[in-house]
Length: 139
Image 1 (cartoon, one colour):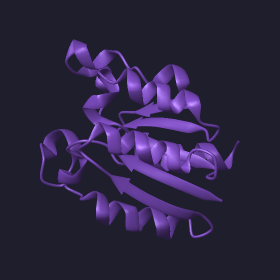
Image 2 (cartoon, one colour):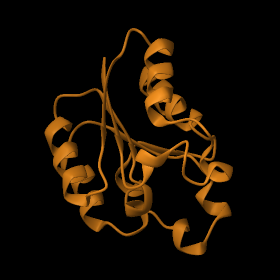
Image 3 (tube, one colour):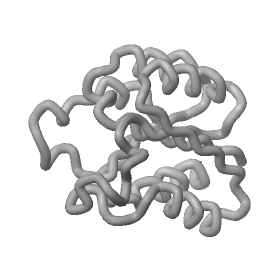
Image 4 (cartoon, rainbow, N blue to C red):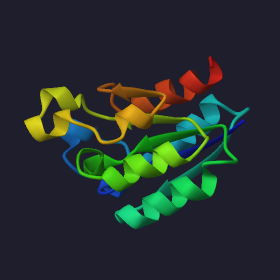
């Protein structure tokens, strides 16, 4: 099984950025934990602060991978183009968020991605990612 994890803007600062919201662990460290937890899965990881690069990666892997775990960060709430990219591919996508966006600012309550995704997992910290991976294992 091949799973692509894609992180959007500012998620390269995990472990440093607002630790009260996002925790103290870098995504690099967490990615190693995921690989150890699921040794049977071939993981790939990509992060960009640029919307077009996220779209390019979705299109690149969207026909060959078994799943995509996507945390589009702030683009979740602004990018129709990312939603269109998800709708255009065959690989199922699970949208994840580290925080519970519904407990935050009102503008974060709407996602342009969710309607095109297999599901949405939010509010479990970095464990939102492993829950998304589990969703691909159970079907």
